[in-house]
Image (tube, rainbow, N blue to C red; front, side, top):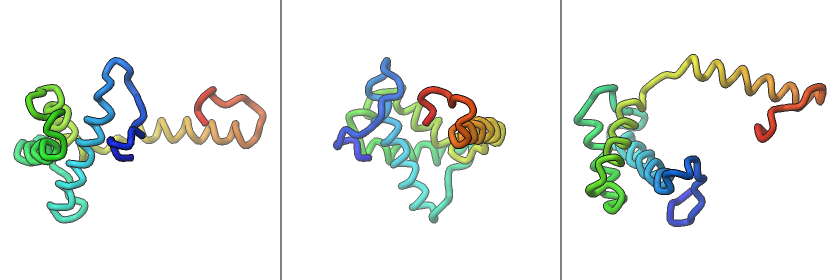
Length: 116
């Protein structure tokens, strides 16, 4: 999805600009990864790499990242946590998804409303 196409899903109705900001941050992170040799993401706590991702986001969207400290903080935090491994969350979500798939396939119980 490109932000100019208007295809970004709203996840927080209190912050209407957040999906576009996050999309730009992920694009800047991907650009950093490509420049660093493919799959290389910034190490946690690497301030220089976080600043490089923020600089990439600023070149992509000067209006959102120009003087907005909150959006700059989001870009830096995304860059710092991009190599994180979330095993407990993956295991929990995988268990819930597996249970819901079995419910949907067997038809014995009702899946969580809105899950599929």
